[in-house]
Image 1 (cartoon, rainbow, N blue to C red):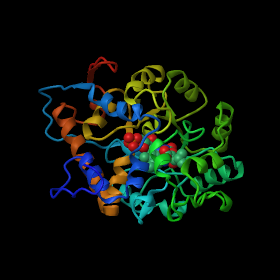
Image 2 (tube, helix red, strand yellow):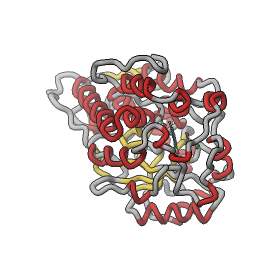
Image 3 (cartoon, helix red, strand yellow):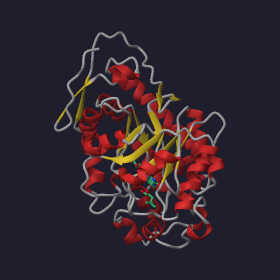
Image 4 (cartoon, helix red, strand yellow):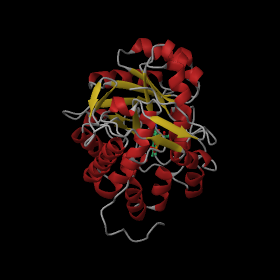
Length: 369
Ligand SMILES: Cc1cc2nc3c(=O)[nH]c(=O)nc-3n(C[C@H](O)[C@H](O)[C@H](O)COP(=O)(O)O)c2cc1C
Ligand SMILES: CC(C)CC(=O)C(=O)O
């Protein structure tokens, strides 16, 4: 569907249906900012194609009528192995912004990851009964970086997720062509007053606030600075994964940032098996970039992930109907996952993580139950 076409009359049956609805509602440059990738968008497309090349091998006669999707993520109980990915500037798609998403996630029993570049104060995102993860960008303003870590701890965040794949922003051609700038109502209010970037392009703003020199020694500093579980987001190489574990990381997000950073980067789902082989169960492995169905979640589990982060579909739900729209997306994904698990003969998440997968480049031989 292209911008401006009619909204379909039936309830959305897939997360892609929700995207179609959002596209019909949003200004084209806002849709492009969220949907787009970097460069020629090869990685953006490859993320989706790679999931479709991972073929699950179902078990039969396992007597499963309903599957139990519950699990824990970084020690936090979750109604399914999914957390909301950190995303900057929610209010570009809907005025209710991050608070609506954090409420929907809490009601769905899922962790919400607040972004450094969130458009509302962090304390509005700590919802009773909800679990908050906090995503950290390594800022040029080191005092602000330290303040953000302290603030996350004060608010009871359950994990600190340091993004390591954005020394600066990938070249997003759609944004450049559209002249996209973050509107004032979505500005990143948790940065210091002078850093909020009114009227700048997103790339120029990111370059002015994010410190591109982030290195392993800084990771040691972060590790010493906080007792929160520390998660590195944006790891694709097994050697980096091992080094992160050696430096005390509690979790990794295997991610190419939804195809928004290095165009040509390997699809996360294809990078996952080697990382799993390299670190085993030494720390928790999450995955994002292109998860669009319960079957995709199951593929990630079967290839060794403990769970996934869900990115754009959450913003499509928010765009369509605020908090209710996000709830609909999360409920749909959970129902799809339960169906896929039951059809695969996996009664629970541990069994799902032992399923076999066959595919062009992502092969994991099924282990015995
Ligand atoms: C609009 C938008 C903003 C994002 N902002 C951030 C951010 O501030 N920090 C971050 O670590 N990742 C950010 N991401 C990347 C997501 O956390 C996640 O890695 C990616 O969206 C996953 O891919 P998916 O959208 O295909 O599910 C952003 C993604 C989008 C679409
Ligand atoms: C300012 C950007 C770097 C935020 C982001 O991570 C994204 O848009 O993918």
